[in-house]
Length: 552
Image (cartoon, rainbow, N blue to C red):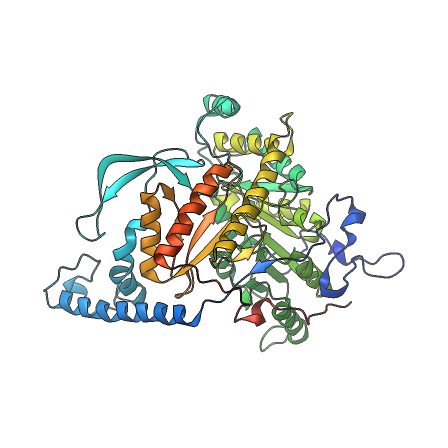
């Protein structure tokens, strides 16, 4: 991939566009862009089933009551702001000082209005402190508020053995200490906790090099580089790959780290509808035909940004079609596998393996170690010249402290466990158990009549709640039943699509899942959350591509 200035090529030629001896393109792209060359590349698995994803619309009355609830909340919010201005009600929110009354307001905006008048009323459902490892069960510190959630105090009571349905502990590797973690303890004793330097200075350890070689082997690519923070892996490396005069095509549901990295790069950003190949191809075609605005010169680079599993929707990227479009229009592809690496694919190697594609079809493979590996940090992998370029130009490599040695050892231990290099098949068994648990949990929720989003193979399962009052009641009631869940609302989701997000783990037993499902069934009846009518989405333009053909 060329540097931001558009000069040299730093990840080689576009190897996937080279012609074969018969003059044809190297990739077969039949109808709908399904690439079938994976079998010729030695991959044992080719995903030949149709993708089953659900984005069912809510009944009309549910949306009416949801917007009505927000409308009433807004009216009462303005009333309470008036009372605070008059001094009748105490204002606990951050306000401007009297000396700055003639300045442009620093705090007074709509999101601040939303925070103090709605979020504060239900704030007890977020930031709950836990005091144990985030395994299949954890312990929660009980807290109460005497001022309507503006402040909290701890009661000293610990809520024991809460079933954990919110942590990204997909393979159950974030657990309390046992003998399998002895190597991590040994590294801690030998290397200490911190590195106290950047990778460019004195911060490259043999453990980092061992980990990078293992990641490259795991992903079947030439090279990899690891970073101490997953969020910064995206936000600090995308600006090193593209810059002014480049074009980024970003899925509308991409994670904030991808969005921030794209904005920091200075490149032109255009958004395509989620997983919609018609929308993406139109942007690609226009970019090739018209070039840059005003000057009409060709773009220095076109970079497609997508995720493997989308963390708020539970959907899986339509990778074969995107790869086909990328090849057709000579673009680059950057995929964030934060949630998919370790959690999907026959052996846990992410969406590339899930679809049976060649890793060389993806120019930049990014992922994090915070989910399936029970650690922290992230990686970027691909061609050796790409990684070598980032070692010099990445902001994280130049300015950020290197990954802690015990963290690196935990990732090495986890990755060897998944690959079977520890001499057992337990890692593979956990990947398969996660897939079984995911299908079982999704199937049961569907049968109960809940609206859930996403792909049937995705361990991230959003359950739609819609109304803000039900969001709070749902989380509070479940905690009282010793079930910990994550509820999500605006601005992380659209205003009217608040939801609970379940993360299934291989560590969950069938008894645990049945306990959760039994309580969800009762909560669905109590709060009237079973909205499903098994109808197709009201937004078919986002997901319906039956008329889309991709021909060479």
